[in-house]
Image (cartoon, rainbow, N blue to C red; front, top):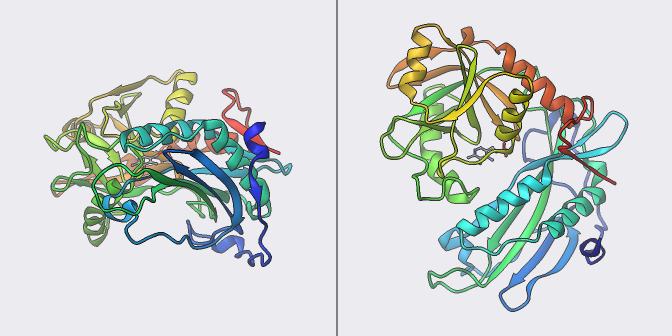
Length: 358
Ligand SMILES: *Cc1c(COP(=O)(O)O)cnc(C)c1O
């Protein structure tokens, strides 16, 4: 592989002490190394290197600080019981990163280069992949605009960086339902905006509502559409599914919803299990109606961090709706068991989602 051989590796002289596996949390500790490569309009991507994890020095005028030209990704590496290292659908992350890049007027990264980078970095820091059940190595590739001029134009210089963090099981005591606040005042994204791009501004835009929801005892916010405040978009950093009368519904991708890889994987698994799954416009009113007439069986969020996150309660305009008795539903459990089974190499990987790093 041509790209792989061109990655310069500078190993750290002072490896860090590894944190205890039962105290990892999420994105708190970082491994010994990071991957960096540079882009200029004249040279394209160049300077692929793995270096000791360190601060980055940028000119204070770098465009990323002022105009938010940046995108990120998130995926995980898993250690199997027999010691192999598996990545979950990494090409899908880089393909999505390139769709985000396109929307943010940033250059695409060659997917083979990104794959060579992620594999080389994972191998360099393979001792950091936790082995305890449910733990994994979270991988955060991101790109920033580094040109140091304040004109509002697309940057002519970028850096692509990958950092990695050992993370704990999202639910140390097994999966637990969350309480979600349905947001009717603030919006996250609008059709035609940047909602489907994994870009920083979407998250900054959501923090105010998230804080307000937390103050009322809710863990996350369910976003409604930006125009009518009627139609369900997604939850925090998760896509959302509802099981009503035996059929599973999820909002169709409309440009303002993130195209989750866990979402896509869940849809494929449901189809394989012959459970009807429908992607369409979904109103919050019809979810409440289904809740009132007893046909709403389960609700759950999907995303890399939590995998499957059952929803035990919604609160919309002051009206509470308890789902599945506030418990984790059967389908949520089955999906969680199967997806994590595939990710940790315990279940047959029928669709060849896992990529072994060796
Ligand atoms: C990353 C993300 C998701 C989930 O995507 P996965 O690929 O499943 O991790 C959903 N919504 C938002 C806003 C996200 O940033």
